[in-house]
Image (tube, rainbow, N blue to C red; front, side, top):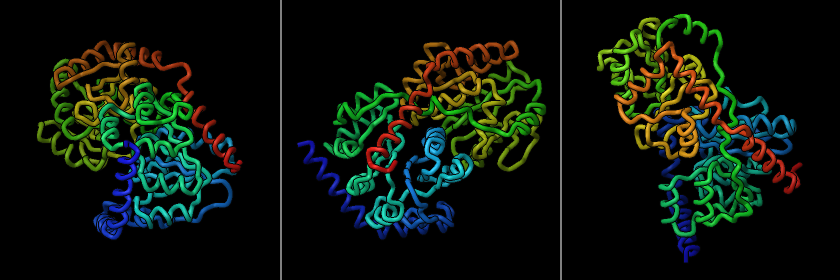
Length: 435
């Protein structure tokens, strides 16, 4: 019965997206005209290629946005090193991730926008690129693209998969659709035990399931410009400072209130706010000014960089710089129901880590760090202020101690997920006769 329900839901979805294809194209064109889509490349989302397909073996990797892309950069580099003749094709869905791809991917890798899940866009995409293998990262599955890729005999892998309790409940309401889509993958690699349980319950065959951990644990520290780090470090010498990273609407006000309270115990305190989406810079700047705090803004090059109480880091691709400059980092998306963000990046760069209770995206990792004393949960402005003040006391000695505990809590084989993923991709290519 579940299979019948799943098949019916899939059939309805495929019919509706086929009927809606002209409207979706119109919406996409209008978004491009408004600047909400890449004005030069938006037709890639219609499956129309921006570049020619190179000769030889091509592996397509889909990473929906910034977080997923960063998690597979090391895998892409490893693939390129293991097979110099292989071309990685990386698809993402956002302009932010496209800009990041241009900065981080190895020279041989290509980037395209993921096509819409409509008949024409999917057909054009697969006809042009005809990948030898397809790698889907984490959990964004587009039914038509999955079905059509499988129908062409292209082996598929799902790596770095994670599924919260909420997501699992939603998939269960879709009958056997999850079992059908997940059954198309030759290999399914999950980040944690919770996801493994959910996938088995949804119908993934145990022999196809692997649990190597998170690719994000194996990621190298984020890069930054050393000269700029040195300039800002000299500019802020002697000032206690902390970072609110990847904040979302609803969290900035908490951060600003925490700044006011912590500053009473830490004269000269500097709070760096790096919103998850840099385009929120203007809104965050207004909130800072409304709170009566002095502001310097990276994106607009405004304000007194040396003396401002709040530094707004509203640029793309510089998070490594802020992690390096701040001994304490609060990871956003955790005081609002977003699910939290990657804790491994700040830990890798020696930050003392703070987070809110909404961390279902990385619940196992945060639980491990909390238990080891390498991270600390906060719930509101007062607890955030108290934690910042405590960690930055004694010239930051408590922050350094907590950061050391966090690094010690990282498993010794943190790069296992990378090695397992690389082996799986190469094995699938060999089985398909593409090696």
